[in-house]
Image (cartoon, rainbow, N blue to C red):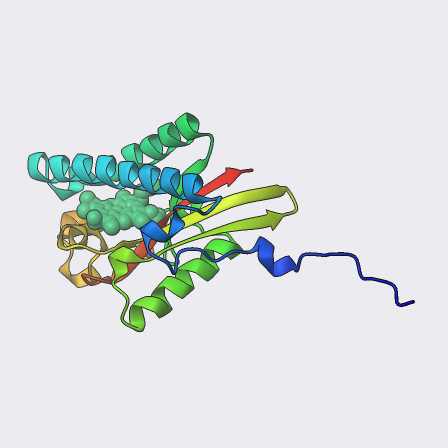
Length: 198
Ligand code: HEC
């Protein structure tokens, strides 16, 4: 008699690309809670940082606002990480601060994929991706959401020759390895990234 093969689930079931679907489609998904939480954390990070940035731009101007990005961005991300037990951060394929914003291999793939999807016509502010990833250190829920460039970003991320000279100088002094200029509105500047141990 032929021996029956053990019932092994194909490995691809462990890598579930979830976010091609709309929000409602997640209702029955076992990851729905993780995705909801990741979206909430993303919203908080973007909103808190955005309002700190806008307030400082209006109040002190772009040179002072550089300090907000430098101090507040890691502080806000750190607070959200501690509060949630997930790592919350921002990454980019062209970093200003490579110490914080350097994407790992998985994040690089998602960022490249976001660029492809945007080039194929998807709206940059809708691009997100969630997946369960098995890594040597364990199993993680991973989530990323694209951060599109808005007009307010151009003061510090626009083409070099359009930056105010004082901004250019400050950036050169603080970020000698800066690769985060030359963007235009609608391009993907980077992504929020969330990684939670399961
Ligand atoms: C006042 C200048 C300024 C403005 C305006 C600004 N940024 Fe930044 N941005 C910075 C600085 C400075 C950093 C580096 C922060 C650090 O040291 O972690 C940064 C870092 C980032 C990063 C993290 C990845 C990296 O490159 O290090 C992202 C993503 C980002 N900015 C997106 C944006 C977006 C989107 C906007 C518009 C909504 C924006 N920024 C507006 C100055 C600015």
